[in-house]
Length: 295
Image (cartoon, rainbow, N blue to C red; front, top):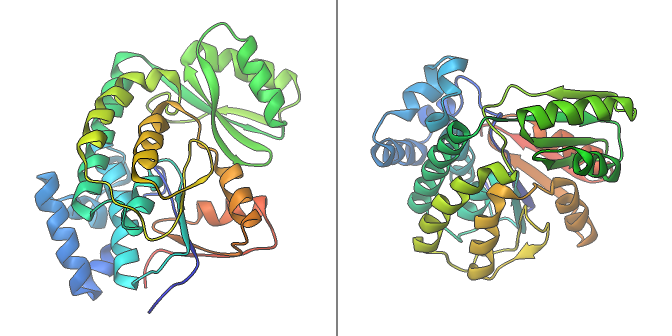
């Protein structure tokens, strides 16, 4: 089977118990990759992916590698030939591996490093995130700037849906102001930290060293990166954008808008869940989009 379209990859939060199990059981290639991942990580992540509880899957050292593995192994078994790729936050690492910019092994090692670096940053300074619905992006940005403390726009998911991130008190104050300004919802999320905000700076520094040491190659197709929503094929640019990603917002709305403007009208979400399929439909209702969690 060959898929020729834009391939998009989900991020943290898409995990579910049983993810990847059917792949493992049906494909010798998938089994080989999953067992290699177990060896690289030093524990049997497959046991948790296939049979673990939701609580076990939420462990930092599990969640990010699990979502990455489900996406990348599925893409490899399907033999995808993407015309372009993009990933939401963590999903950018999956996109890079599928596009050939990173090896499977290096991609997994970086994801594992990223997960632990983010966990350490969360423990250093308590932070949180909140979903804001039905307010213009610029209104949300202005209100965040008016708050005393660290709170910034973190995920531009689709028109009318933006996630803010920062210190707990600052996020709570911003939520109160956003509701006053007419937000349909400003809801603090059950997350462990202020991802894609300046509070992730310690993690950015730690991950930067690992990214600089990794072997990046020219990908087989453009990757639309989170930091600037633009297509990249230059390995050095890709590395620098990936380093900046942890403290910068995910510009998913702009990524999809740019891909559509560049003529891409067929999208396949590879990995757990259907979140990106839903977001893409809200950003550009006219494009074709489907999700695959197995084959």
